[in-house]
Length: 290
Image 1 (spheres, rainbow, N blue to C red):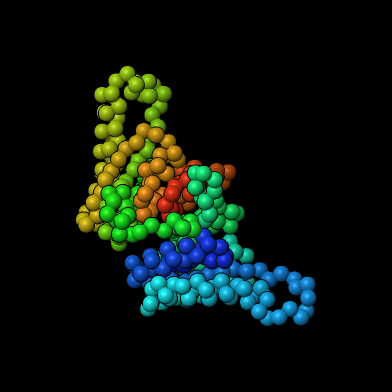
Image 2: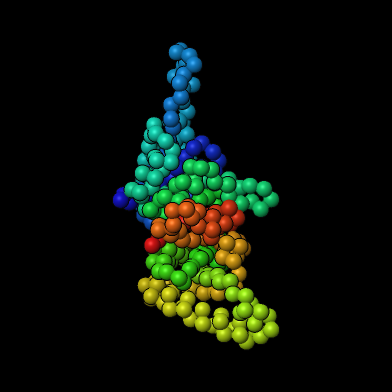
């Protein structure tokens, strides 16, 4: 694996935002940034098309323009470009496997301003072993302002299995930004407990206290490893798919996990990651874990 942050470019404003985010992250990590564009040559309808109008010319221009902008934003940042004549999904998966992370653009849809992922994005997120970050056009936030907020980085956690890769990514992201980390566990109460909760706040508090203690035990080793990160842990009795997007509003980054061993017929990225990608208003990192 190379010490590089890779951004996938397709010529859209969203992918350019992804490239900017990747460059910012590369600077934080002291790494290089790699810009990748995949294109599949189409049959030409005329043999005498001028070189400047060929597909290769425009593909090269996508990379050249992005590289030029990033060099202005980050003088001295090591930047490489890669033009690949291959299927985009295969190209991005290969590039991501050899990188610290892969950053892609995603466009907002409708009044909820959620993410829209095409087949390429969904396949990449569902199959990538390395973290994949989705960034929308125009949604890059002022880092200093976001880091000043208590919810600078948000991570959604399941307590049913270990999520070491997710926690390592989330704590590292918060530490590099000088931000606090809000660790959120969402749980839906079974029907009997829900009925009891409505009639007895004490019962709900007892459940929340027990789950909170479990969440605290999960976080404690990572707090010791990252003593400079202020952690805010929270237990919400709500659907994770619905709650995380609301919790992460105004944050610099939302981190969610994706199981590598999902059943063959199950959705590729899981309902929580899928909802986060479609509805969170900030960049979303999807981290594969066992």
